[in-house]
Image (tube, rainbow, N blue to C red):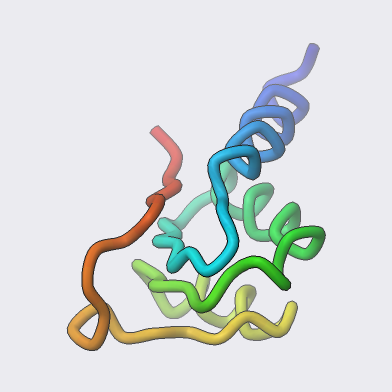
Length: 83
């Protein structure tokens, strides 16, 4: 299995932790990009997204997810980033 396939599977598995009404934190990088792509399938469950970078925010906006400023939200339900 390629490294990209492993990242894609990890991103897909992270979707299992998203619940209706969640505010999700999203990091930056190749693994996170797979996660952002996977969010399309569950974007109706997410109330908003906090992004760690403009690059991720642009990708999130492109799929129709509302970006929330970290200073305007409470706790994040989930934060996904690469390592």
